[in-house]
Amino acid sequence: MIELTYLGCGLLAGIIAGYIGLGGGVIMVPYLTLLVGLDIKTAVPISVTAIAANSIAVSTEYLKKGLIDLNLVAKLALFLVFGFLTGSYLGDFIPDQYIKILFAILLLYTAYNLGFKKPPTQANSPEDFKPLNVLTMLLSFLTGIIAALLGLGGGVIMVPVLFLMGHQTLAQARGTWAFTYGFASVAALILFLIQ
Image (cartoon, rainbow, N blue to C red):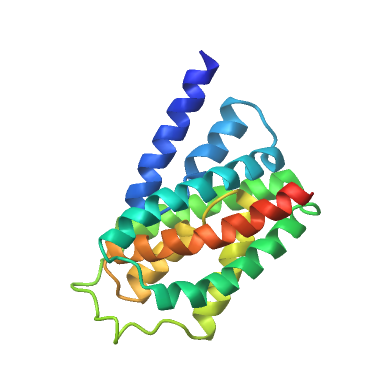
């Protein structure tokens, strides 16, 4: 019976991740900590492993549809990977209760941004979309830290950033970020395996 609940959690996380452009950690980490009873520092590496696999599956479809800005991915991924590596290291020193509080705050932030803010009326052309500035690089780095601590793909932060600040359509933001977090999750996974 427990195996069926694991499968159900994975399926739900995959569906939501594929549609919203997240890694699925927003489903898996609460499930593993609240229902299965794992501590968050055990649940995070499990979630990151699933995120790496999810990125491959999701990104394939977004590539076929032309919804990934590969030039932007290469730039964002660099800072995200450094953030992921930093977050993986910091996770050894931050108490579990603080990580759980951060997770709850992040979920509220995401719900607000995707539920209440008005989307742009239309997406800019790729030539007009130039979000790579100091703020975007910093956000990508910080997203990597938070994502590694919480076992997420970072989409809870960066999909709204690309959608609302970068004026991409939601589909473009999801596709671009889904491909980006694949790089970072693999880097974090390697570090978790070494640890």
